Length: 343
Ligand SMILES: Nc1nc2c(ncn2[C@@H]2O[C@H](COP(=O)(O)OP(=O)(O)O)[C@@H](O)[C@H]2O)c(=O)[nH]1
Ligand SMILES: [Mg+2]
Ligand SMILES: [Zn+2]
Image 1 (cartoon, protein in one colour):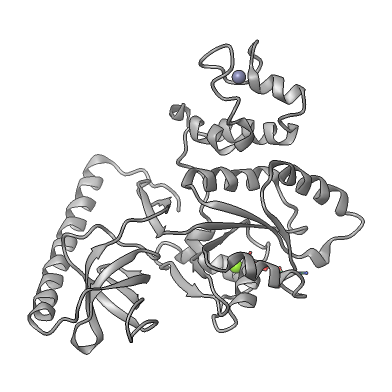
Image 2 (spheres, rainbow, N blue to C red):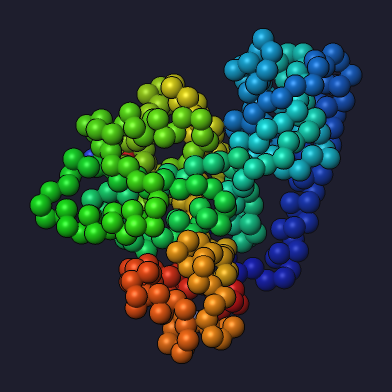
């Protein structure tokens, strides 16, 4: 979303209005909660947030007879904001509406800046980021590296997925193979599939088993097609149009958790598919290039920019082939794109 420049007075007004709105909502909530808690609440049990709508969330029961059933739940006022993927303690109420009692600790958080530039979690407990690319649109190593940095930064394992393998031909094969070789050399897991023809989809499903995944990647690489093929009952629209309509509505589209029929979960929303950089420092980027890990801190100068400084460990590694030229190019272009103050 485009950042609007607001003056102080406008900002103050917006905050005031939002504050009033929030306190009205909180009042309504506490009335609903009182009614609920006055009635019969079931025992405390563990659940999984599969979608959230402002002050309400959808929770899937994870124990007992109701396992797998979905309940709308209200949040107690003292709770932190919940996101899709959160594990919670909740109590069932009458008429199918429940109450969230506590949030269980998150293993990971995917964050995105909101419309005011503040970083907000959008999904919890994701443990696999599937970075999708394809022969067409032509892949950019730089973009893949950005996703890898973001994944490393979030502490989430990445899986590189080349979709549209049916489009590989003599023309594009050399460049694609060179690209794949870069990541193979780094030890990143890599899979080739065709959402259209089904090749490799079983292997992909196996990789997704037992994990909570998100699919990311540039528009047109086939994310919706992959999701459709893996989740036959969910309608994720395919084609350029869906991306267009997604752009206009992504701030209001909630992330939703789906179960794959053969195991594993997917958290999906247009906003998550755009998950990328934009909130990392130079040190984060350096940490995201895993082959730099042993080199960072060993340059002659403490504030080495790895540009042309004498005694630079990265430049030496580049010269000796321990760091690949393409990755160095990516690193430089990502650093160059960071805001000045993120050093
Ligand atoms: N040839 C081929 N085309 C595909 C494949 N997967 C998706 N596509 C096509 O690529 C285009 C973009 O797909 P879509 O799923 O909307 O991509 P998204 O923007 O990443 O969600 C559509 O025209 C799809 O039909 C595939 O495996 N092979
Ligand atoms: Mg799509
Ligand atoms: Zn250096």
